[in-house]
Image (cartoon, rainbow over all chains, first blue to last red; front, side, top):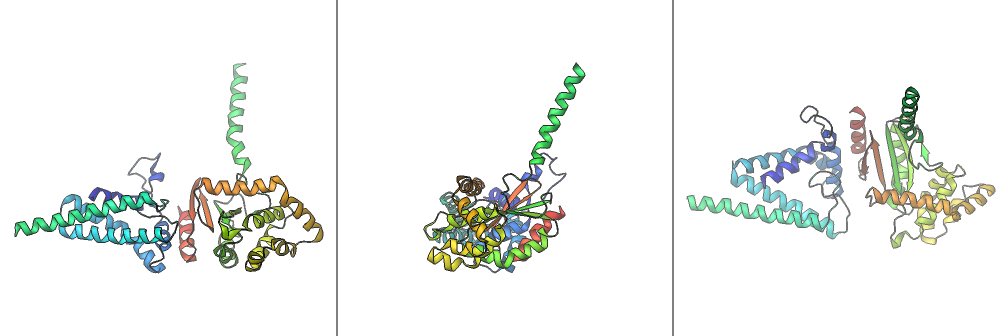
Length: 144
Length: 205
């Protein structure tokens, strides 16, 4: 789960196409944040200023909680954050899909339309994250 | 002999490299482009004449985009027809054919302005031709009416639709932004500052 979140943050920040043909780490080109902001705005749930703010911050937050999950640090906080994020993402995707909106998911970079496939994928991720959260809190009870 | 061979091969190679550049914008559509073809950016605006959001873009945002990027030589604008195949847009393809036909007599802008201006009226009555005829001279009317039925014009509209399908476009209006051989569709026109910031960012790269 941590690796998936690191990947999700990474693809929203780093332009993988621009890296092709160039020496990696020498020339890292960032994905224009406006593309992600436009994707968030397409969901029509937050005002544009909030979409811009989220486009700047969310990929970094995904990277952070991904790294915390991989490192096993602040495990309960990071699993709760992951579950809450995925609940929000999944609800918005279901809402958009049910409303017949043909918009980009915004999950793993630009240009990926919401479909049954993305819903199943994100639903599975939510289930896994909820499982991890339960495990994290059960472990704490046993320790107590 | 050997030298001549090398020379001929070099010439053929040079031609192969130069010809695609000379060809310019692929299938740009006669009379449906604005600005400098050599501009660093290309905007392909995919619209449907029956789409209310396209009317809004055409009447409110397009003049600003033209002022900021097309008139300044930063972008080359290509108008593409994308009549959506949905029951509500029953006259879209007819309108697109008339607009493309009008482009062949140099009246694309006037006709598209008229079609968007009268969208509600002809969209309800189906009197598309009346909206178009109003901005044409009698001579142009005859030519446009004939051209709109011409298979070549119908094919020109279809080529735009196919182009949109190939690019996985699914809504109108969409501006396909091409910069340094890379393409990115843009559909979010709720806030022009976001589009401007994106385009300005590309130009700074």
